[in-house]
Image (cartoon, rainbow, N blue to C red):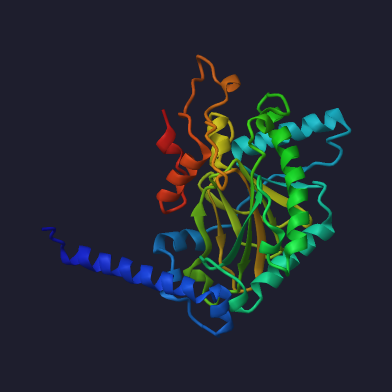
Length: 347
């Protein structure tokens, strides 16, 4: 027979109560926006963050650090300019794990229509959509390698999702080429490893929050993919952890944010860094964003990924064991807190 102390029993009851409330919230299909529309004036307990996370949130953002912004103009026509960009990508990927790109080739009209489409979807009546939540609602769509059935996409944003996905896949290929060159490899190296095969879109909607000091839009986490491309509106909130400080990733008109994921840190043998980041809640909004995740976790493959052999030597041996994408993502998800699972694969 197991015997529990009073403290353990209370803790277990609290976990059970929270699980039940989260389940009820999810089944309501109303999402966070539904709570705001209902006129709540206080954040429900299931969204309240741990005090230590909130203390760091309130003390962040004011720093002389600035996330690098990289101009991709003329990289296909001017070899010297391309080498400059490769150097900038290498520096940002090694020291920050984050950078923004401008003149990336995706028309402003496509970016704006994608954000408008996300907003239209999340502002539908609750019965016409599905959600999941921190202090945000999310539409999850697998766009590649197996394209979705067109009719399965929401009618209010179907066409722009297909067009945006095509454009961001092309940008993804360009970024994989630049990252390959930044590692001293052939431009096609990462593509030939099938890193560019998969794309998942997370279309996110962060309603204004009545008590932003009590919660987070997205909790601190690292991404489990190769890299992520983010489209965001002018409403800020995204922060990256850099040199033990939370740094604002301030929106730049027309820019897309790129951040290195765990899998790219693994195969680069720690040359590139996967950075932890989060999104603060805001009392203005809504904040709308589109997260473009490059990996094939939704289409399991037996292919093994480990440190690239060209990047290891007797003096710099492999730091990680091999893994499939599905195994890595499964271990990442099993941790429950969305922190990096890289330590589990350390040699």
